[in-house]
Structures are given as C-alpha cells and as structure tokens.
Amino acid sequence: MTKRYLSTLLFYQEELVRNCVIGIDASHTVVEIIPLEKCPTETAHTLFYDGVISGELKNNIILPELSGKDNLLAFLKENTLPIELNKKNHIVLWKNIDFQEWQFKSKALPIEI
Image 1 (cartoon, rainbow, N blue to C red):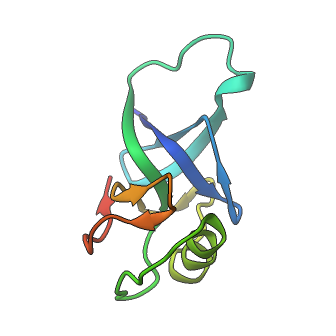
Image 2: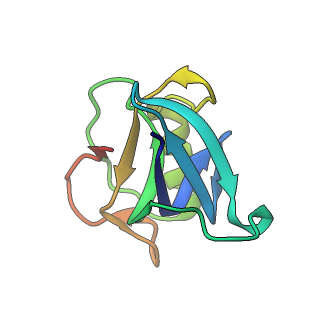
C-alpha cells in the first residue's frame, strides 16, 4: 500500500513546489508525485505536514543562520539528495521553517517520514 504525504512545499527537481502529493511504497521508494491541480479528486489517505518535504540528507549537516528564500533553496540544493521516482529514496520533513523570513526556527534537523 502506498503512503501519501502532502506538505506546504516539496523540494523537487531543485525547486520549491506547492500542492504536490508524494507517494511512498512499503520499501520506502518514491513511486508517485501527484500535482493537485491535475487531480480531479482529493487523493485518499494523504497525511498533511506543515513544512518542506525533501530528499534525504547528503551528510551530517549543521543548520546555518539563513534569511531569505534564495538562501534556503541554495541550502537544500547543497545538502539534500534529489527525489527520484521509482528509486529507493527516503524523504525528510523540514518542519521548523519560518515561511515569512525563510529561516530555521530552531536547530532541529528534519525528521524522516
């Protein structure tokens, strides 16, 4: 059974994308990304999280003091693996982002979902 997740933003193909559901199968493989604008009905059994979903972390990182959307985007490009369909790919949720100032609210690292 596929687990589906929706977040405020998805970091996919080096961009921050809104309103996309990401589907993960039992082996933690990303099997689908569904843009909600092309979906005539709500996707079933979707869990919503407030934050940014991205690919897994590349290495041990320390959250820097960021300010601004461009800085956050550059940070995600440098420190996360790309989300790819049909490949084993853990995803993580960055839930401590202030979307007004585009900075981390705390030094808490993302959680794996």
